[in-house]
Image (cartoon, rainbow, N blue to C red; front, side, top):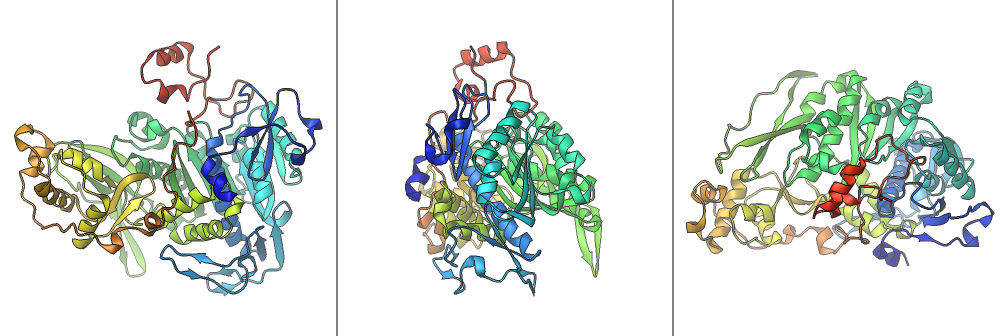
Length: 579
């Protein structure tokens, strides 16, 4: 049944049935949407924002917060108990399985090398006095908060906030309808003001979830102050056009980073939001530690912990980097913003030296474009991601999108940690106008050359490698020898002509190696799903009175102009219907 649910797509609205609660509270025109363990009352006519495709987002968030709670509450002497979690098997992509003899929820939790005595058990749906305080800043119907109350153990309280009074009233109804009124508290305030009010250490939230319609930039400053020491900040960005290079100047005004058009735009977007979070946190002598950062569908989602430490904040400059990207062949180089060197027990900080490239690309002769700064450190905590992957794998019936969570997290654990950004094989091939080499052969050539290589969850044809661009182009030159290009048709100023005019300095070997095929690919895990439904992208903003963000609707003339263009598909999904 779980496999069927995962493959058929996200939750859908369904007629109300008595087994989800009493129908006495159902108003005319309302429907009930079931997702996870929640049954949410929804008014008709798009009065409350809801996108069923983001079920994966909400499932993943529940899984991440559960493992975060397991780690944090163990230090407080609280044991987390998850329904259905019985097998203590630790999932390994190599096919090996390890674990203790006792169930996972009965194992001794550790804090560093010190074992903790667990004196209290936290269960789902029950209030835990030593549990987590959670804030959902832009809650709309309260679906996410209700699911927290029903599916995440170890909670003390969940504040579901929305700026709309009607939405706040609906949140309160949904909390009572699902029997979590003792955990979920509805709030009707400006999200930023609410977080600013909770800046005192005793008032801070252990978890803050921000999933706005569009950009979260206006909430970041308040969020990094209102989250507790070591707390979890969960942020979603759906303004991908801005973050992926279509409006670099707008991206700079919102996130303090210039986005550029490049094949690695999805990972660049993740590193832009991490840069913005770290930059704002640094103002208050705080810094971030990314746990998981994913680019899926039409949005990105990051989970970071926030800590305080003046000494650690000094490292921030050396964690950021500028991107030099060739507009001709796509080669890129990173330039760190700062430099730190260890001098015995002390750390010495200095300005970075550069730039790493000249004004023109050494491979094709074209100019470089400058982007960033972006976060240049690892964007995942592999140990934490492995914990989440294990918990989901041994209890697949817990989420409707468990198969996809397993596939995405498996790819995340395989990614090279210290290699920012990626190339795509098809773009390398199109640059020199030759046939595209099979992915396994190209990966094998890099491995034979003594370099590391991995795929990326952010792009299907991505290649993450520590090999310099020169090696990549040497491999492509060797490939072109067996798949020749009609050079007489190449322009003398084209990147292809310049690249192919240079002889390769290495002899690439394209014999397929066993380790060239990652385990997630061998096991045919659900890594990149097909479109779950027609018109599945960002939905229209909720109508006035129920909306949960403060951005204005597009003007009427703009909506009409967009609908008159041929390429309406990418725009209309973001616009409200016109009557």
